[in-house]
View 1 (tube, rainbow, N blue to C red):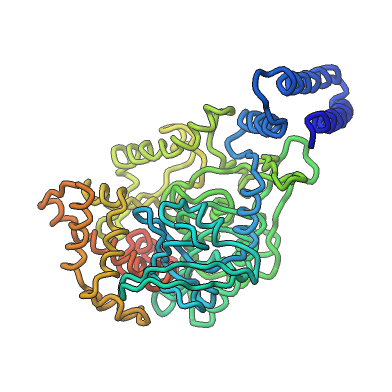
View 2 (view 1 turned 60 degrees about the vertical axis):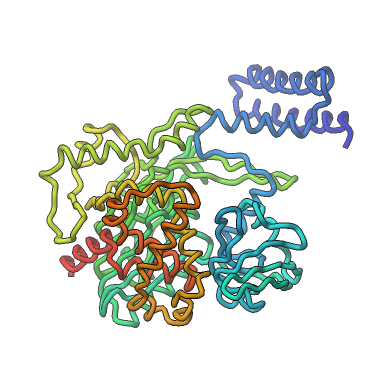
Length: 541
């Protein structure tokens, strides 16, 4: 497309915008006209007079980015590639080869081939290293590069070169892509004879249906109390959160409502129907600082309606509603159109400063209030301390919201009914965790021919109860530390090695059994937050 034609197209678009703007802003039509005329003149001058050749497409895109960055932190312009990826993530399925993977030391490691997927059918195993994709090296690829290379149309094939450390073999395999379902219910099982547990990792288009199926199965197995774990859940579709809330709330209960600047179709009220399957039994919702958006809608709805206790930490504080407006080139504008409120009228959005600097501070320093939380509770909140009998966990009743905000300033989010602070890990443990030592050590254990770990591949219960190669695990942790030049204090290592073994065993569980196996291990080995939740659930029954 010639530059002249592009400019003519932009003139037409801007002219339409001028007409629309004058209709919407009758009192300020000259201002709107002047502003849009100036934008057009600047683009025309740069395109025709700038010292170097400048793409009109690039100018338009940068202009859009600049406008977006002047707004709130959650309004975003998405490139066609990001739009495609986002749609695949949230529609509940995508087309690819069906693997969970990690990038460790520049190497693409198969964490788990998805059950029933193309990779499992082709013989790909957990722990395999993919060293080449369609004859191109896979070493050093980013996660985004891997996703782009492995996803594709159903029926198309991709050739992988695979190294299998346990056998020392390198082989090639063609994997035919297919539609891969993505799940938001990561795990659902009974913690004991009557206590159900459901882990929700996000809210996609299939979440409400998935949750309904998991709930029905647990009820059939004899569940009389439920823990819904949404720690780290970043949110997703608002209607799916409302659908999950509907399972717990009596008919006509208010779930959430939104307020926009102009009202009309952007102002929405969700109410529960009469179709809930679990409207009477006790419920505990577990959240943390990573729980956001739709997660906060669900937690706030159940809390405000007196239907569940919320346990854990204060949530993230995202209460802005976005709607996506698609463009012909495949890109899109995800624009904030409203704020949402819990049934009691709480606005969950934490404070922010509009503009680029405010946006950076919002995302980079969003955790700053956590230190304020700890100072309030550990230094001044002992009168709120609750004895639940859970070792290494300090539990506090939540203060009145007004008193909390007065102490530390308004921070948004959902305040839990009971705050749970785990005993902090030691400095050495934290460093090894941050530097990925445990992930690499787990890989070395899987590759070690002397290890018994692969004998548990089809025996999760056996692995949970009997796998105890602590000396071997510690050996590989220290081996990775030597490779990376990390000095290890022997006394600290001795004190913290038990927790390190648990971290590595957790990663091994994920490698062998997927995310559900890892969650099962973490739950059963003694998750302090869940232990507190279970104690509180027992009190409700």
